[in-house]
Amino acid sequence: MAVSLDRLDDARSALRAERRRCVDEREAFRAFRREVAASQATASAPNQAPAAATLVGQRGGRDRTDAALSGLRRSYERTVMSVPHYDEEYGDSFEASLAAEFGPDVATAFRSASVLSPPLRRTVAAAAASSRDEREKFIEVVDEETESVASMRGDIEDLLERLDDLDRTPLSERGFDALVTLYDDLSALRERLSELVAARQETISHHRRALSGLVPDVTEFFYADLSVRYPVLATLAEVGATLDTATRRVERRLAATP
Image 1: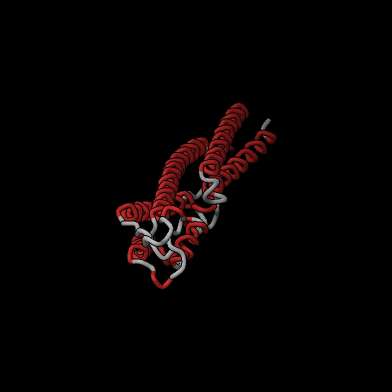
Image 2 (image 1 turned 135 degrees about the vertical axis):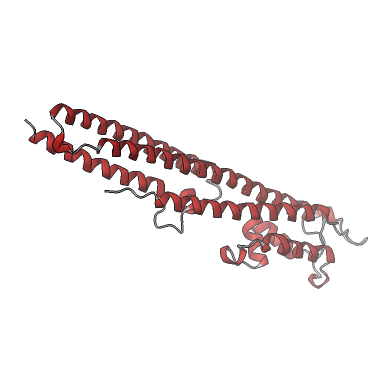
């Protein structure tokens, strides 16, 4: 039974694409935050309450939305909503995107405001920084996952090469002692396989702990478009099935050898 490494290659391709999207989003939020920080908040009129007294600033008069507030919306559309994959991945309206990224409270405050008050500007800037940091953290996990998949691919290739070496001499040409040695060698490969499975499961657990607040299952998120959600474990399971078959053949030969 030949073990295919195509799943691992597909996983690495998926990770490269995900990293590109994350980098684009990180840079978009970074650019948006810079523009928010550089924008000028609009002061309240003299007969109104000070802008700092409320989050949204002046209430009422929605038709009098000021240029700074409109400019902030255009800035968000020009940066965050203009990443190459936005329509394909999200396709949200401005309001929906703002609520998804910054939370409903910020979205409501922005929608209710008629001027860009200093508190609102600071709140939006902080939310943009948080979204930028989330992408940065996600990129770190993508990089860790990419390194893990590459390392696992190398370990699996090494294990399969060792199995191939053991298979060079037909079972019919081996005596009892040679068959016992072969059985022990296969057992050693199974122990190594168990180590790889345990290491992989720990990596998955680490990813889940690192990003539990962002996505429910990191590995499934990475590989949602692949034929399997756990490509490394699926490949290891295929290696295990191959070792099981080889071990059973040796056991049968041992039983038939005087």
